[in-house]
Length: 264
Image (cartoon, rainbow, N blue to C red):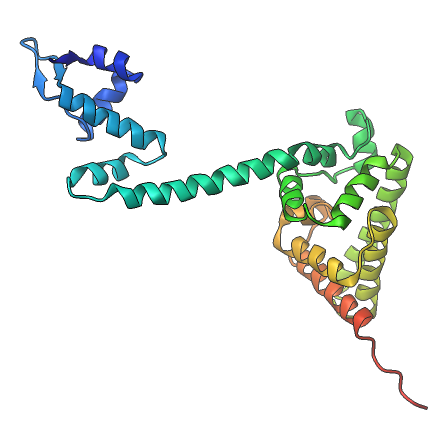
């Protein structure tokens, strides 16, 4: 029995345009034509269409499907196993994202109910990138420090946030001054600024030992979204994130391996 393109589209839950596209691509050409020249699909064609739609549902591209179906001896099992692994990884990733999405939104909202104008007054150009906040939650989900930082951030009042951000702005001004003056990243001034930043984190969010501070600084150097949390894009300079990262590492080394005191 033969079926028209409209009938096949209804059977398969696809559009006529899709069937025409499959025909032009050489993926599924109807076996026959009516006296009027209309496409007619056979039972064999419908079986092939089922295979195509099966692979499409699994996320294979049309080129991949063509390669799989082109050779009757081709082993589709390995293709399916590969796709199964990819899907399993994606499912696990989405599950992790779902688990942290609500907490990431809390980071975005900073735990304080503010109007847009109040938010600008408090935070200025500093904004939380939700995608970065979500990734940070995934990365540090098992960290007690991350959990403490989230809890303390959510508990800060509007006035505490004002004070916190004022401290951060003053520190940022000193950092820019040191950088613009070509102060060495491992010099006393740069390391003191790094230490001040570490203490700022400890004072307002969570205990920040030198090794943790190193990891935070590495994020600043590697991810512009992270660095934008301390220096808004309008105030950034080329090389500034790397400068701060080096200063943090130098300060961490200074604190964990202090220079020996010379005998007099």
